[in-house]
Image 1: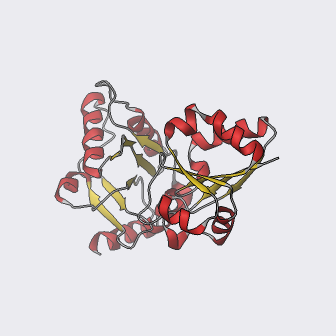
Image 2 (image 1 turned 45 degrees about the vertical axis):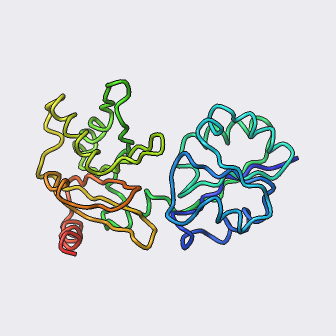
Amino acid sequence: MGELYFIGMGLSRSLMTEGAKHILANSDIILYDTYTSVSCDITPDYIKSITRGEVIEADRNLLENRSNEIIAMAKEKKVSIATIGDPMIATTHVSLAIEARKSGIKVNVIPGISVHCYLISKSMLSSYKFGKSVTLVYPSYGILDTAPYYVLKSNRAQGLHTLIYLDIRDGKFMSPKDAVSLLLKMEEMKNEGVIKENDLIIVGSRLGCSDESIMCVQVKDVDDHNFGNPPHILIFPSNLHYMEADALKWMTQK
């Protein structure tokens, strides 16, 4: 009987745990997840250099639509799904883990440092004051999904901060400028006073990499800043404790 491992590789090589490296080095097959995220220096070629096993680049089609092929592999061999960040942030992997367990396959999860916990820590905002997170996606067939607008509205009504993941579609990474433009378009559509030009926004860029940056700016000033290369992630702070306010002031002046 084989095994199925979900390996969180962290955000960069420097943040990959020894446990993750050990499992990867001893796997028969490694499915390198190219769908849910990307790293500055963890690549399929790097994984090939640290393992004896076969490395296969796994896109969304394989992970979601052809999961039966993965289950078949894991019934016979030691298979690892290697993911940037933490593997169980993605519901795609949770679904696959459940399917594997139903098939009688032993499933193991090796957590990794996620962009979620990394940015919360770096922002110095209280982890107790974060509400529901949400993904902001590109419009499909001209239709704009306004779920992020209402998540932001609900969190702010409770005095909670909102972490917003940005869409990756067909290899294109949503930029902070595009994200704010879409959110302002939602405000125009709904006109409920959720997003204002003077609101603060925290932008994390290339987190975990040598060229990472974390900036705190006002919504109205987003177009004036260069946030560097992707990927990016956003936080919309809500009501601030005085220590949080001091931390953001320091961040703004950095």
